[in-house]
Amino acid sequence: MPSTGEWIGGGVILYLLLLARSAWKQGEFKQFLWGLVIVAGLIGFIGGIIWAWIKLSGG
Image 1 (tube, rainbow, N blue to C red):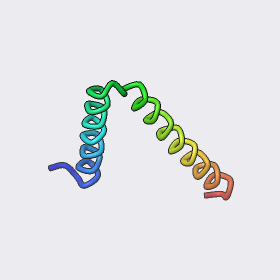
Image 2: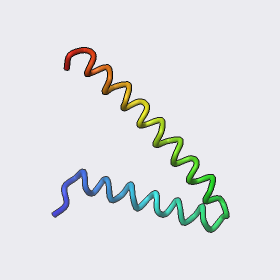
Image 3: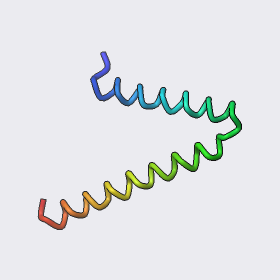
Image 4: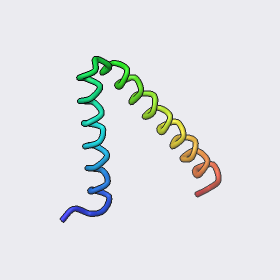
């Protein structure tokens, strides 16, 4: 039986696939990918800042 995190991850992946399908049908797949890259970059940047803060504070 999948854990709660696996259910949530599966739901997020399913949602992104449905968004990608919709963007493909509307001819906006390139914009969808750029948006995905920007959001992933922002999340990675914020995660990097938090990671550096934890490491520098001695955690």
